[in-house]
Length: 314
Image 1 (spheres, rainbow, N blue to C red):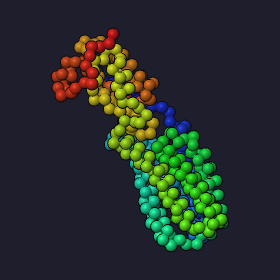
Image 2 (cartoon, rainbow, N blue to C red):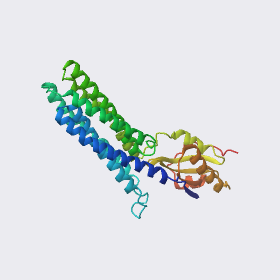
Image 3 (cartoon, helix red, strand yellow):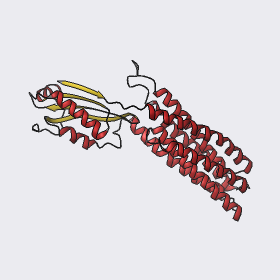
Image 4 (cartoon, helix red, strand yellow):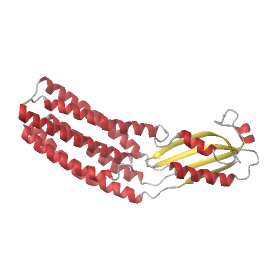
């Protein structure tokens, strides 16, 4: 029986530093304007502005939690946390998504009350604040765009800011309609649209976070293609207990039992070939392979069934 594992860790230091800097600058920009927008919403009596400020509040919290997750995730592995702390970013992303749903509930409650009794809204002030908000969001989008694929947290922050930008556009539309027609009902209606944007931006993050925590196969990896690639190596009879999962963003792992014919004498080369193919074809940087001969599988794993049982390829 032969066993080997590989850690082909890429150098993420440069990317993480860039992500951290972009998150921090976005946090400063959005947190500062959030206060301005909340005050503007209160002075103009605009629920659309207040709901967008509430969304910005969750954005600020999401960015702060993402920064904390990066700091905690940088801690080295320990005797009790052998994978390290990188999965904290997944928990942070899940908490961020769930917090957004709470904000939606608050906005929906206030929107319902305003639909029953629409208040007077100061459209000009509402539009002025929304224009500044749109500029702020566009600045944050530019900061986060480059790093959005590096981490589920950065991607979540990016989607939040995109939704915020659309919310600012919605506030501008509501203000324009109120100025030209006097129809104040549009204000709570626009806030309902913003709620839909919040739900849309949060659902993907919650779904992906739960998928990772449940040790799901990474979405960009085809399980069957991985299986066929391993089975295609010379000397492999069959394969079982193949598991593929994500430890944290950009850090995929694989483990499997590979069965070879009795007397196969190139096990070391086979291990190296499989590990190399997993890295090159699928970007899996942590591969653990245990090689067994046919008689070992029959003796030790009587209840195990290989996906394919065949003669070794020559």
